[in-house]
Amino acid sequence: MRRFGFTIIELLVVLAIIAVITGLLIPALRVGRLQTRAVVCSSNIKQMLNLLTIYEQQNGTYPHGVDDSMLLSMVLTGGYVGDPTFDKMGKWWFQYLDYTPNAKGEIDSIFWCPSRRIKDPAPVRNILCGNYGVNRAICKDATGTIGSEYVGTPLSLSKISHPESILMVVDSGYSLISWQGATNANIHPFETKRESSFYVPGLEVNKQRVLLPDNKNDAIGGRHIWKTVNVGYADNHAERLKAEKLFVPEKNGTYTNIYQTWIPK
Image (cartoon, rainbow, N blue to C red; front, side, top):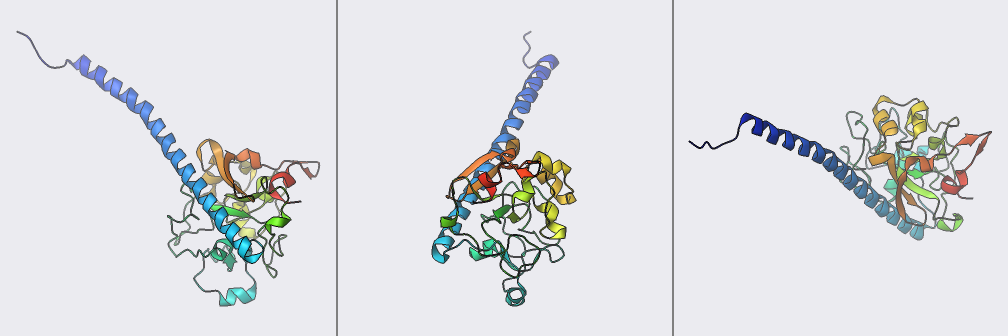
């Protein structure tokens, strides 16, 4: 009599094949998701560059990175975007671009990185952390701001030599970033409690830094696949490159690429 069906061995072989195929597909699907998020992040930066360009054309300079002067802080409306224990109370560069986050943090906003890897400080989502940073050598702090070497009038595009190579906005641990966050030299503090958030995600040098616990995965492990970062330049183009490309090595008191990427001459 002829029998129909599978033997135990045949079923085990089929299950083994399915397990192998699943094992091959899951990493590919994960890579696909990471790539998609990186593309969305790059799109966010391109839109930010457009807004920054429009602002510069209308006002003659780029916006301040932050204005925490006492007078402005007293009259500022629209809520406080950070954690008052750690952050300055003032007007930030993205608010100059007509974006003010609500208390929950708008995760569908172009100012919110889809690959964000830090924990949310309770009880609010802090848009200042784990998203994008503007280059403080261009978008300087307003006069009256305390605790920064980048104080003064923000630059205009005409003041930036070789804008195609000067960083404007980048994946960052904090909403402000400078070359001090990407070097092995001693880092000049901007504000004591947020100093450890001044980093480019994925830099090897971040392993040597004293980081807040919520920042370690982002800073050391990197934010995008293969420890890449999305970067927007002053000429309005964006690129994705290895985080180490933004590193500023210090040797005998000199910094080899500080004027090639971070500070306009």
